Image (tube, rainbow, N blue to C red; front, side):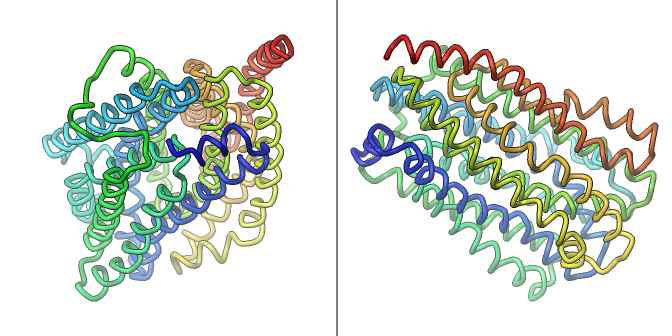
Length: 451
């Protein structure tokens, strides 16, 4: 790792260090969110509910692809940060290299499985006779080239682990700009519809991954992609997977929950699926902005936990929690004031707009809780507390969400279905605080003893 990165972690004031680590990540997240919105926006301009619905129905498969990358994109940075703090530089090289190679191989395996069972998967997603064609067309391209999407995720995450935030953000920016440029060309000029959106997404990801590969070939990084450093061990895989698998499981379960909600929502009309998908874009934007900010804290926390500097780690925890919660309160505005304009940007169908607005108003109640959830989750990941990280991560995605879906729907129908996600956020936050208190007390006590 470059000396200036070590200096940032070791000597800079906590607010300066967290902001320098987090703000580029937030920028990367903003650009990534534009990436996510682009396909939906341009398909929405076709004013075709079938193709708009196809994008929403394909989202669970996107989550599975991301989950494979995030097994290593979340697990490896936590371990690498701790190794950097302990000055175990050879282990850093091996962990990074093993993570990239195995992530790509796992994605290729998933691609093969999808094409072997394509029709059953499409039916499971909740497609109707109208939407099964465009959904299959979109996913055929995206899944076929999903390995480049995994590479983009894992390579960016590893750069962030050693505080190379600018390079990590630059790749996302490159990919997003290309996606924004190619989307209207393929969709409108070449008249490819959802297939055009898929090709634009793949090209953007491929160029971002190519940029990261160039970065890794230059000096100044502690990481390696050299084949000779691909030496898997039980220790590396154990450390990476114990953090990465819970995070990945959360995304896979989120994919399952999305499929479940799509199938339940289909009973109220196809327009509900489109509304749920479009409104979910704004919800995901706020979610990812807060998580992107808090994620900048994780390498700092992991580094100082590995170095045994718990006082500095706890100071970073306090600062990040206060600022993340304050930012969450500010982010209430889009839900409360811009719900209709946001929905109207993607569709002119009034039924879709109305259901989407109800969803956004329901989600507003849980937005202020996101900072607490994410700071606790990232602290558990940074300290290697895989079990507790898994509980927090899975709570809002499945553990609490799934039973609440059926309970609320049985009581209030479609309205209950919409409000169940908000209720899961509330319960998850309570559980996160209860789990975090013992860890924080232990770290505080050990820090005082060391002083």
